[in-house]
Length: 66
Image (cartoon, rainbow, N blue to C red; front, side):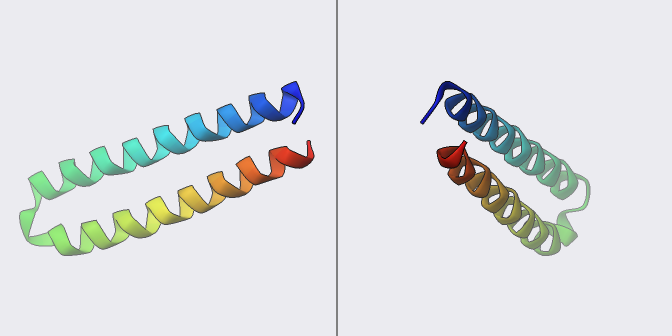
């Protein structure tokens, strides 16, 4: 893996971490404001986190060919 690939993988990991952290924080805030909607918020949070993690994994895997 070249230096550019390592940089790209690092940026992908950073972006995924920030994205999932923001989703989790927003979900906790939403549940605190509306506890009766916790099930719907949690389901949406898990789906969004899985999509972000999948995109991040694709980005990290694509750096092996960079």
